[in-house]
Image 1 (cartoon, helix red, strand yellow):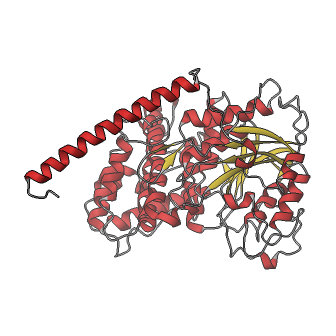
Image 2 (spheres, rainbow, N blue to C red):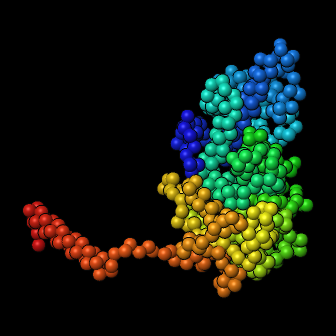
Image 3 (tube, rainbow, N blue to C red):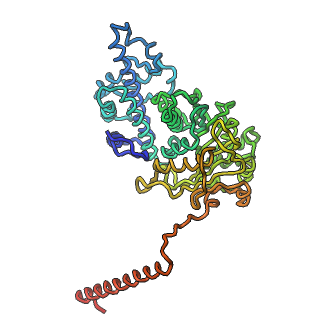
Length: 517
């Protein structure tokens, strides 16, 4: 089995599985096929989790008087109850039957009926005539082999990885539309490593397929915490993406409040009174149809009314509105947000800066997103920069850290770039050394700089890191200029000589061929 490489790309079994599954797409586009595949992976996941518990109960049946068909046993273990009609072995047995589409729909309906938390979440249109039933049967065979044997507990972890990997591949296959549900893993990881959500309330009002939450829980577990140390709140306006998120979190065993249905965070804020300790988000860039003209007097616009034709500064103020007094928000924005003076945006940015809410700005490398070539940046906003010994933070009043990471990352194919784990660790370390009481910060020209509010004012409140970090220092190699110039001149004359010799040979060859002057 192939392992995830450090930068999140994968050339192991997930990629082979994708290639096999993608061959079966037929005439469906990626956005439609996505739900077919991810629905089946989810079905396999809950069936495997159920089977592992079922086998355990069956093994202990005589000694502990357990009943593998007792639904309460599964509820107590936080495992979805899978009725007989929906168990994977039944679907696998019917994979080559023309009725396989109806079998899957019946399974999805039965699972939703038995598990209220999955109500209206699962796809239930596998019996539609347009879906090739022969290909569907082949897809079931492929997904049926993900478990790699009878180790169902291991199968659950693998299925979680496959689900996450497929989300990324679908984002790439869908192109522009894919950005509505997927943020590149390296970007999510950097956001999480920067703000370090150990304990408290985590919020994403445009949560897509839930990647911010998955990475946050992973961070907590990697640092000795437990699932449940953070309370998760989210919202998503796209109904099918909302379902993807619910399935993604269910696969991870993550309990989250995403509201009872999809909803627009601007016009139907499902968590109106929430003050979050951590906000992580990748809102749609430069959204022009957000209905701003209907929200002119909204209580969230503390720093100015955002323009009706661009939601960037509506999102920024929405995040700030939902921050707790010591909370921190990390979010992705189009680069234009750092310097725009269009309509009221320049004034809003000035007011946020004057309130001393901007903690850190990061200029990101190009080509990180599958879905857009718009260059992006990361904003980190906090309500309090005062010393906080409880959290280990030094006093940063009147200062903002600027990091220019545009030269970081590496190409994973001709058009896509990823930050490596080493890049992510370095950027986060620079921020933590600057922010934390025990950190030792030193500006590095060309890369990062701690700037004062007066410096930001002198740049007309533009937040582009390149304005502040300056030019990179060039190390002196210790060779005297005269010596270096003599050596370079000798090399150049040697190259002139070789050029003359090459020119003479070419002329001679042309003469031999009858093309001389």
